[in-house]
Image 1: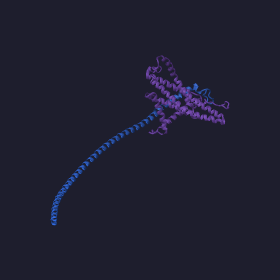
Image 2: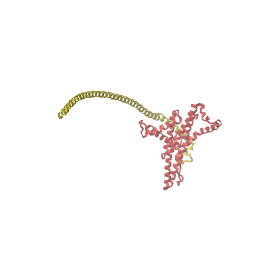
Image 3: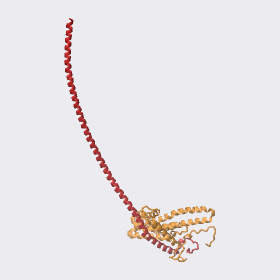
Image 4: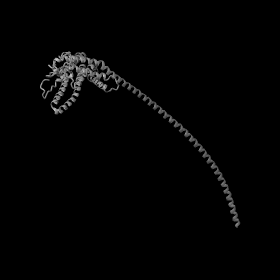
Length: 156
Length: 248
């Protein structure tokens, strides 16, 4: 029907059953060849690529995990050192505070003693002065009395 | 060619005629035909894309390798998604089927090429093979349990005989719809392009309209050829899933 080169197709060439054995024969041949190519070349190649990629990805993920662990450790260490440093700082502060306090107390006591001595001395001198003044007043009043008596008697 | 050379000399079906190229002028079952030639070309193209393309095994794929990987893993994921992990056993067969149809469809869009997937003998044989394989796998995997596919346990008892008839009919219609869908789409698209081309030849300066139409239809066909290859494959996966898990 439609198997001649020069004539035009009448109806549908698809329904020309005379061509079916030929079509099916060649299709089976090519499908089998294609299947063998797929099985031998394509699938191993693609799976290989896929497995390689998976390996690299898994490797990177585990490496990242490792680094994460290390970061955590370092963080812990930093925290520990920080708390230690804080404690030491507190310690130093405390001791210097104590030292300062004791020195201040010492100085305070010294100055208290010194002032007490000074006050005592001043009191002593004041007493001496007061005693002295008492005597001179007496002397003076005595003189004054005698002079007054003298004057009174002299005028008479 | 000796017919009248008048205005409408359109022969849209000529492109589907099978002609022997080697081994004599008369078509024998072993003749090397134009169809055989295009199967060979698609085989070479497949080898180029899937073997020569990714030959460097790059970790980060280049353009060529990307295409191969995209197609490969697209089908692989599709099988897992539809038929589950057990479906992967049949991946080589389904992948072969897909690239055979896909390359036949796509290469058929080249001018002067021959679209072997537009022949009902080809698609029908493929669909029958799928049908037989799926039925055999169903019975081998599930024994008589495969018949649960037709006896729907989740439906009311009264409805089950009716559903049985419907399911049986739809099951046996599968290879027909499966094959005619593909061949019909391929044939129709190519015939339409050819008809518009015939108009263009007859219309002189007015040919701009049919040429525009050809461009549009060609664009549509680019879509259709890939989608039909995809549809054929996804239906195969669905049938396979029915065979592996017949209990719905």
